[in-house]
Length: 138
Image (cartoon, rainbow, N blue to C red; front, side):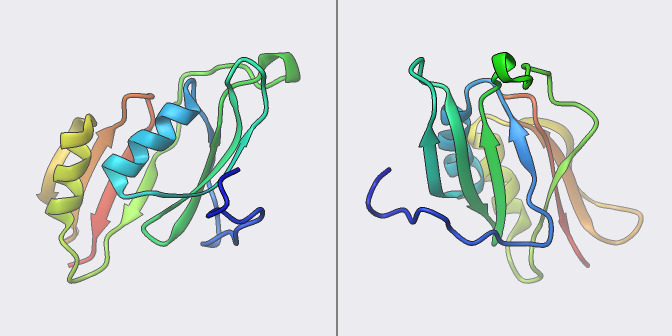
């Protein structure tokens, strides 16, 4: 582990999503570009290069990820049935967040618009199949 990372960084936020994606190391690098993620911990756990654990901070909250390990009961499954939402603070530029994610390689699922409930909202899918949304209160 690089010396600039602490062994057990604090978990930020009341709930920290832990996702399993095929290519977790590449996903971490992608999230740095798309969401300005900061990688604060990494554990290489397999001789074949699979990532056992990675802890990121995105927009002030923790997101954790790993590669699938089917030999330990954690098979590769296409991400479905959940959305990771990034709450953009009032005064921050949600259009910049959206544009950066799309420029990095996310696919637009729902374009950034002012919604009927008054907030700005969008949905994007990353190259690993994870659905993300962004919301900014009016």
